[in-house]
Image (cartoon, rainbow, N blue to C red; front, top):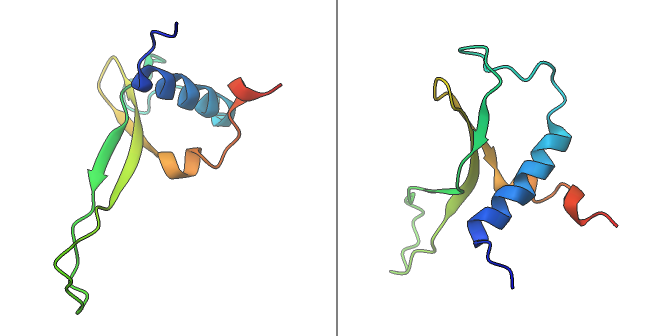
Length: 95
């Protein structure tokens, strides 16, 4: 039985993708120069509705999903767009 939560599985998936993409060496924090990175839980950032001239009364929910990667020493945080990451191959699914 798989006891991992959906957030844990997502974190593992996106960590594998980012590890493959992160080619800049060294991988130091630009603020404190440590290499102490940690991945947080997925974050949903809602979009503010804009006036379009058409008002149906039902506004579709729109948001961007991001995966935060933060320095555990100083708190500097980068946000990676999940839509972009989902377009990359997941190395953990390679056969």
